[in-house]
Image (cartoon, rainbow, N blue to C red; front, side, top):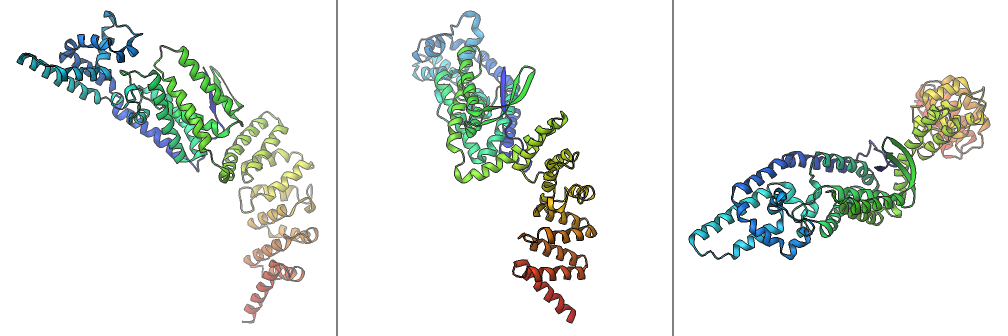
Length: 499
């Protein structure tokens, strides 16, 4: 079987899918708390049906029921031979329409003797006991039936499952698709998509294929809705999918809507060909189409485009970074460089990408790629100390050798200076500042750089050096904001000395 899982969105540790996790835990808790012993309860109900006399009393009545128009539409293609007696017993017990038929017959009976009256009362009492025992089985009490398509069961059925295997695979798909939908749409819309898709999937199944003796249980319709919404969010965009066929699996970028079409056609194909299965393909189909529609309807509008872009970037850079590492492992340097630059474009603060790019380029320090990455490293988040080791390495191995101050932009120079000051490299910083006064004399950011440089010197008790720099700033850039701040600081210091 060909399986397709979208992998465009991964798990973000800062925004864990708590709703998805919570619903999965609730479903698991319901099964292991209330459903784990359902088969034993069903056997006890069957035993009671035999021992209570209902089996003998209702044999002829069931044959009369099979002749009614209501029964014919469900049993017309399922003849009941003598060798299928156990199956007939099951129908008698769990067919809700037949149980109603029995109740109506008992209410209309006019016993001719006290003995007949006693028999009817015992029959009625046993029938009520049977109903109570059936209602003690969660699947038969809260599952969705054809005759009850529009009651609370269209919601409760999606929290029940027929067995451990059914539960396991549904929980896997719930987590795989739920975490993406929760990140894309938010928790409120996630809940709307899940519940509405599950409900309408149940309605479609019960109306077209439901049986009065077989309740619909399982979260498949609701999960199919999450699948449809996930795909509808991206529309015609090509997104990342894990393609799994037998022992082969790989990642491919495929058009989202094409995959939605494939899923719908697959469910239709199985609905038409897998006639002996108990899988509710129509519930899947109804959930998929409902989820797809709701995905288009509830997709964030223009006001949320910026947030949407950030969301996509937050996962996209990780994908490019992982691809870059794979290219590096294969010594495919050009592709690795492109992937790392793309990762940094999506997330300029990703320290691992900038480190990998620097290590990639430093093998050829005379290249333009190396000069570019040095500027990127030094311009990296100025308050980020994760790359200080790279800054110090660049100072020791490249500044004044392969890289001149003129090769740096002002942001890179500013970052270089901050990195040196953070690591108490004042001696190396002083000549760099003097070079900046020449090379960046007309740059609007130079006054800010000189002011911060002066304050840093003052904090390290280099008052005389700080005064010299502030005087320089006040004299040459006195009309700027930082030049005025320099004058204010100098006046304060003079006032303190006079005291």
